[in-house]
Amino acid sequence: MYDDVVAFIRETFGTDGKIPLHEPRFRGNEKAYVADAIDSTFVSSVGEYVARFERAVADYVGCGHAVATVNGTAALHAALVVAGVRDGDEVITQPLTFVATANAIAYCRAKAVFVDVDLDTCGLSAQALRAFLERNAEVRNGACVNRKTGRVIRACVPMHAFGHPCRIGDIAAICAEWNITLVEDAAEALGSRSEGRHVGHAGPLGVLSFNGNKIITTGGGGMIVTDDPGIARHAKHVTTTAKRDHQWEFAHDEIGFNYRMPNLNAALGCAQMEMLPSFLAAKRRLAARYQAFFEGRSERFLCEPAGTESNYWLNCITAPDCAARDAFLKATNEAGVMTRPAWVLIPSLAMYADCECGPMANAERLADTLISLPSSVIEDSED
Ligand SMILES: *Cc1c(COP(=O)(O)O)cnc(C)c1O
Image 1 (cartoon, rainbow, N blue to C red):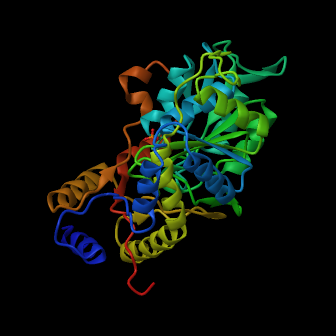
Image 2 (cartoon, rainbow, N blue to C red):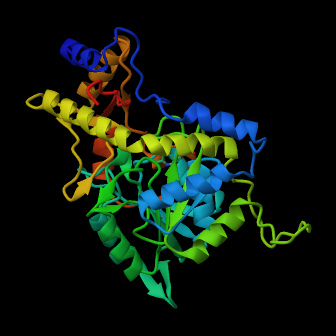
């Protein structure tokens, strides 16, 4: 029943072998820069590739500053610390996300609160966020307080799912109105724009990931992005053990983390940034191909939301129902074509079962029907 899907994906990727969901490509200066980092002996926490990679990402994103970290989860954790999230606070996020989003909140000893997503963006719904706040919150002495729990809602972490930007302009406006610090989880969205502006800095803080499966990779890596020089300084400080600046003294002025990105990884990142425009072009070609193929079938291809430009990191479809989704997953995976469902909703996980949830019909629907498709960069021989 899905033979034509398998045949189409095989033809697209030009192979009879196993087709992964997303594999990295190293056809640029990766080996040269990594070898150079090794030759320099600066492979660890000091070295010029880190600053160069931070500059390259900040310039590309169009934000003033970027702070490289060991991975995206660490970037999220540090960003929440910088946002002032503390023991007993609440942080609003979406139920449909990778577990790292919720874990970073838990690392701060804060409570995640789950608000629904939009069906077209798969990201936090501005409308649901507003409804939740109007029903449950009030601003007292400058802080947004959840009337039911008495706790401060310190931050909001929307996630740009699969690279498709959520309605970040509306969400930023709501957060500003309610005195909630916006921390964008843009881990999947390097290269994505909303209303012409790169995602990640609609508010004070945003986070990127360079894990092996993301659009560019540093092996493992992450980045905090911000327009605010003071926030950037604090982010650098807490991710580098909060050591006070001194010629020789080891003194630290808060509980910091060893979250800095090694120079070796940053070297890989510098080379990958050079490839990003060609990766994005390849992703758009692949998305257009998938979109045309699924036209007129029972599955629906997930297009970039209106007013946005997606990086199409992972191409996704939705099946008509859960049974059709499972049949699709079974047929494709058994044929060696890797496809995956959406994440199990975070409040369905035992660790987060006691968290407050708004209505989440859209997240439930996507959790039941969404399928992500092989989305690695295919080099175009005509390029
Ligand atoms: C990948 C990812 C992260 C975390 O990144 P790591 O670099 O793997 O720690 C966080 N949030 C989302 C939504 C992600 O997809």
